[in-house]
Image (cartoon, rainbow, N blue to C red):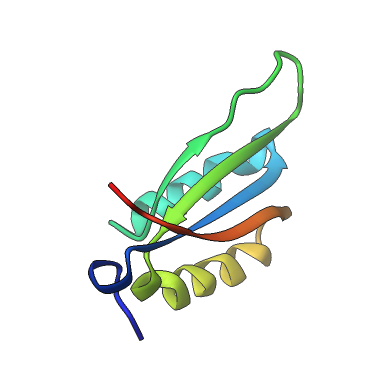
Amino acid sequence: MYTHNQDKKLYRQVFTMSKDATSLFYFTLEANDNICFYSTLPFEKGISSRSVVVYYTPELKSYFDTICKGLKGLISFDVLEEEALIDDL
């Protein structure tokens, strides 16, 4: 397995979920220090769903996937996009 330092790959996923589900989603990600970084995408006032973009490195992919599987049993969410990026910073 390659690490971010070796191949500069970064995974990006966009999730969609209800506004209420975001609290547990964010709490779980924050409770697993340094698993990823995330941001809520812009939304229109009054919309009851949120889209969240998440980035993580290859060495954390299996750990992140395990967290998502656990969350799937607690909250409803969908993955809108999933891609591997080259981090050229």
